[in-house]
Length: 177
Image (tube, rainbow, N blue to C red; front, side):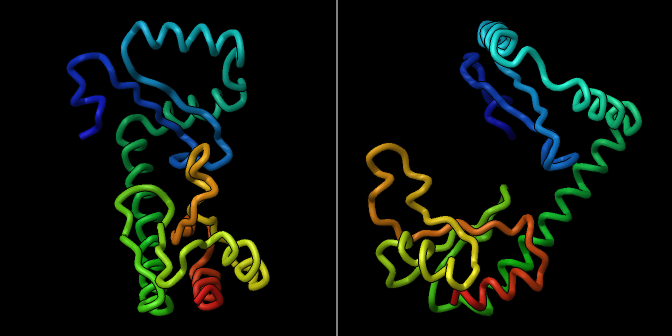
């Protein structure tokens, strides 16, 4: 269940995007929420963005018209299966190369795995020097802290499994280890 479906007070706003469902280049989404907020959002969009690009709107409209509800639901299932397979491959390779060196949870949503590096107080230097030298792209966990906390030590890194092919995942995790 979504938070929006549980909302009885009109306090939840939901943002959705077609970028992962149709194509990562499609920067097109929609919001659902209380009327008073949607009206303000619409006014803000009209004054700042005017509207989404016509080409993007036409592409999404054409696909949805062609797919209908059944085709759209099939597309979502296909995308879910695609990323689930990539996630499972990444986590299996993490088991192979990082067991004993780090811990992680298998994500139930999203396209990233958060990895806690054992015996590493702060991953900033590890990622910005050693990982870069090894041509491994991960993001230090502190990068996701806000404000003053962004300089706090953090033993986590965020790794994406959505883009790399299995061979690249394996090589990257082997180098990271």
